[in-house]
Image 1 (cartoon, rainbow, N blue to C red):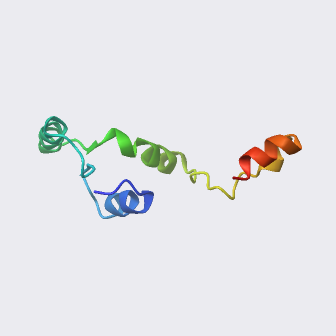
Image 2 (image 1 turned 120 degrees about the vertical axis):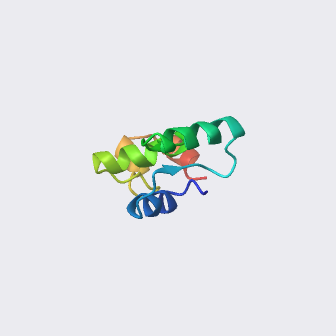
Length: 83
């Protein structure tokens, strides 16, 4: 699956018991199957930030939500971040 927040949250909203990425190795896949079969949920570590943000009710930072000006940087420091 994709590690996009949108896909992860859609899966959760649909009632998913687990979420693995496409590049998951065999060992993690088997571990996930056993855990879900045992009645618990399993989410790969890669999606833990998405889950934590949702649990805490926080939205992830976007490039526009934090401005360079909010850090009181020098003109040269701001030029560096303008790339």
